[in-house]
Amino acid sequence: MTKVLLAGGSGFIGEFLANIVRLNAAHILGQLLAKGHSVVTTVRTKEKAQKILDAHKADADRLEVALVPEIAREDAFDEVVKTPGIEVAIHTASPCHLNFTDPQKELVDPAVLGTTNILRAIKREAPQVRRVIITSSVAAIFNAKDTSRAFTEQSWNPNDLSNIHDGPGVAYCVAKTLAERAAWDFVAEEKPNFDLVTVNPPLVFGPVVHHFASIDAVNASNERLADLVRGKWRDAIPATGPASIWADVRDVASAHVSAMENREAGGKRLFTVAGRFSHVEIAGIVRDKVPMLRDKVPGPDVKGGEASNVFQYNSDETNRILGLKWITLEKSIMDFVASIQEFEL
Image (tube, rainbow, N blue to C red; front, side, top):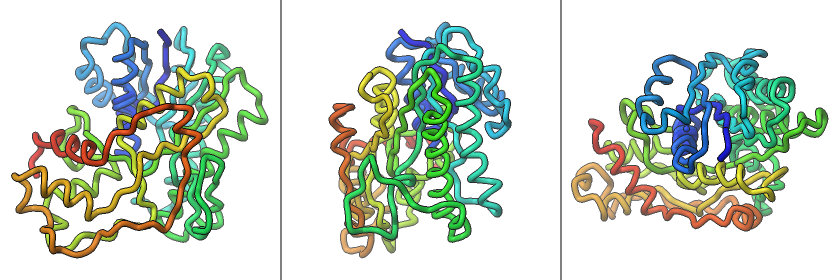
């Protein structure tokens, strides 16, 4: 079994491996432990550390939690990477929000510095690490101004720092793109002992982990599902948006674990797409399958939320490398609904 450093272990994708980032990291952690791996995971606060330890008491002998309060600090990861025996690092920690006043200071710089800081620390302090896996995003792949071709693992979002004031969504795309480019540039220029894999998920749906305090703690993608079940779509279904592709959080977590175990994944970008979705389709799933929520969700005559086919994509290379059987949209939505039953809607 492998000893893994998981940076960002309290995130959504990060607990099925140890919000998008918070829930991702949480799912990764769970999958790593279930497979028998040992994990050293990082969180920002003692409170989050204790929640993770409480949630994984059965695996206490294979789980360590380290505090990294500020990933943008140059020495943020210097101590944790010195933990003996680490062979693989998974970096999911990155700002993932659109509530900022200074996109450079609050979004771009933390994303880029958090990425390069952990890579530098590993090269300097942990030469035994053989692979680093970074959670990137579809935001680093899609180009909203070019709908003439299918986007693939080789595609890059062309936005740069000159675009960061074009709106919150664009600033987020810039941050994810520059952070991922910085990682690839680091490997090309510094030639460390490790190789690099990036996982580029689209919108991420699926169940939340049980130690989240409320439905308000869901990731950015699941937020639309939370709005649906709380009745915010009852009278009008919001537009789906142009980038209407998705994956389940458990599959995205599995992609990280597979990237760790699969030799062929080295040096690759993994574009983890389960398929397309629409808001009207999601509303229909909940309306038809969850009778207790029918008074909160839109009826069949409510308009809006149709599918968007503006962007075409091709993720065949990722599917070939990973060989995953993608969770269906219905199962992902239903498992999300089941996971929030304890919360007050």
